[in-house]
Image 1 (tube, rainbow, N blue to C red):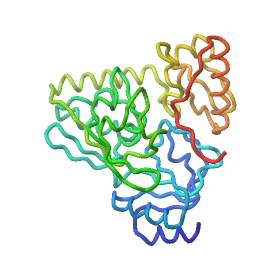
Image 2 (image 1 turned 90 degrees about the vertical axis):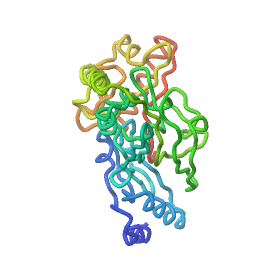
Image 3 (image 1 turned 45 degrees about the horizontal axis):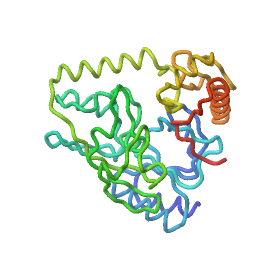
Length: 302
C-alpha cells in the first residue's frame, strides 16, 4: 500500500492522504479511516488515479460530500476517492447545464435560481453532490433528479467511463441503475432546466429551505433520511406512530423533530447507528407488518 501511496502522491493528481478518518468527510461525522484517501483535482486526474489503482489491483471506492452515507467504524479498505474541489465546475448554455459530479447540490440550486432557471428548486436543501444525487435519484417536494437529467457520465466499477442517457439510468424512487444493476458513480451530468420568473423560483427555493429547517434536525450531524418511504406509508410517520422518536442507543438517536432521521447525539459509532436501524426495522415489522428498507448507503469493512 505504501508503494501505491507514493505513486499517487508523485502523480500530482490532487490531495493524497494515508489513514484519513472518514468521519471528517461524512455529514453524520462517523467513519473509520481510508487506507489511502484521494481528492482528484480534475476529471483527468480522476482517470489517472483509477489507472494507477487498477494497475496495483487495489480496491477503490468513490464518495461525494458524504451525505446519505454511513461508513463502518473500521473504515474502508483500499483507496477512497472523493469527488469535490476540482470536479465541481459547471457550464451553462441556455437551458442546458453541464456540471461536475463533485458540485454541491445546494450551491448549484442557489446559483441557478438567481439566473431565473427552474428545475432545481426541489434540491435547495439537499446537502449532497450532483454525483450522489444522480446515483440515488435524490428528490424532495414532489420532484427528483430523473425529471431534469438528460445524460450522465459514469465511472463504472471496472474503471471504464461511459455516458448514459436518462432512460439508460433507469431511475425509480430513490434508485438508479448505478446502485445494483450496473454499479457506478456519476462524475458529470447534463441537466435540462427551464426559463422562469426569478422571483417565483427564489421564493419556492426559500419555502423549501424553510420547511427543511423547521422539520429536519440539521443542528445535529446526520446522514439525511435513513429509510425509504414504504409507500403509501411514510417512514417518519411510522417511526413516530411506534413511539420511537427520541429513542437512543449509544450516541445514535432518532431525531425528536423527524422520525426518519438518526442523529449523532455525541460520540456515536457506526455500530450504534446500525443497531438503532435494526431496532427500528424490528419494531415496525412487529407493529405494522411493514418491512423497512434503508435509503442511507452503508459501506466499509465489516
